[in-house]
Image (cartoon, rainbow, N blue to C red; front, side):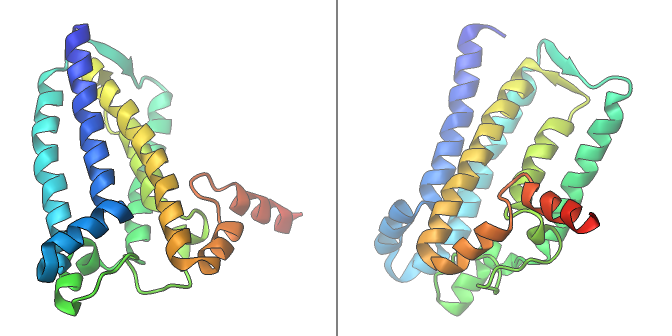
Length: 211
């Protein structure tokens, strides 16, 4: 894959990530809500549809541009890959218990005629399961599955893995700012007790109790 192909592929994925972030940012979504008027409660559903249908061509292009292998999980490292993949599945499943999928898809907003930021009902921020270990289990799950999905990473899939990893880390930080702005001290208390992505606070508490 030549330099131009790398540049176009990277630009395409960065553009998708940027569009995804802009459409859910408070300033842009607020402006578009105003433009939509009485249809503003359909915004979350439209957002999901745009994200999905703009993602499909990028995935097809990326798959067609696999030329040179860059990294392959081999030998004992496959055990680490399997653990990463399994942990990502657990994070997605366990994290989903605290989310309302009708809200996530946008149907709850349409039915209730309300704008909703949290994907669950608990504004005290649930600390059960994975949410008691890290604040963003789906972001960490996404990072783990990005780097454990393939046995072999080609030039194109490696580009995508790097771009999406940066996007998820930056996205988690941006979501933190939005939640603090919306829920203030409630969310700050949650931040003090639970780590964002790497569970170092949980590990400190666990080892402290064992001593």
